[in-house]
Image (tube, helix red, strand yellow):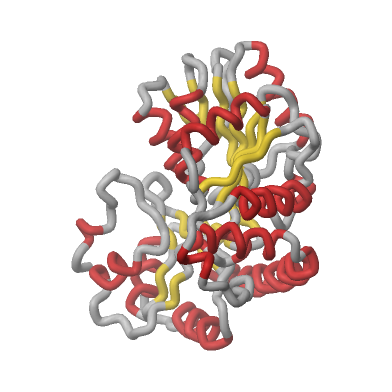
Length: 337
């Protein structure tokens, strides 16, 4: 394959959505690409008409207040907890290590690699394990997990939060994929010592809007807000986010539709390996033929997510239209590798 050296990003972490790498690896693949390498809803929330003033003036405090009010209801944030909006959850992942207490950090993994990367950059001793160590001061959990969809129970998360609080530490719970499974969220019964991250762009299919939230103790949320600085979220993002988060009917209907799509994807993938997990927005396939299957799909202009530390696994997002479904079915059906 050509261009293989371009697969690894500058920071050494592979991410989905990089079609420049896909084109370098498979320069003869047909266009347009079917990008199944992300866990983003392929059918986005319908954008409202945006007043020109959202682009010509700085965001106002009332715009931010409207967004946070909608987010409090959508995420079931208790009155005693604070909430802050940010230009995506990635910046919150980067900021938390600057505000957290010293001490060992345990990441429940394998999971989204940027968590460990951020804590290591900040100078923390970080280990990744399937079970948190007793010595951990800070514990990071992605729930539901990316890429295998593992879900820890409320009781397990509450116990981890109590452990962190005892050590004056922090439990970080990344709920980027919890919108379609609200029962998995700990926000409504937020325990002391926990902070929750919520991502807007994945569920609402608007990742380019760059919008995320942190929910936790008011003092920590205030420190995050100060670190973000004024006007951290763009006016259009405040406006669209407030409207979308208030649209419970759209969320319910979309959740049912994407669950149907996920089951449809299971049917296509089952003959090619073992489906070992996922969420409503993606499925994780395990097969000893992962590299061959990745290459076959790539030659057909279909990009899926592969993993540096799990070479026998591929993650598939959901196709967004019937043409994309047909192309995936055709690529999976060919006999030649």
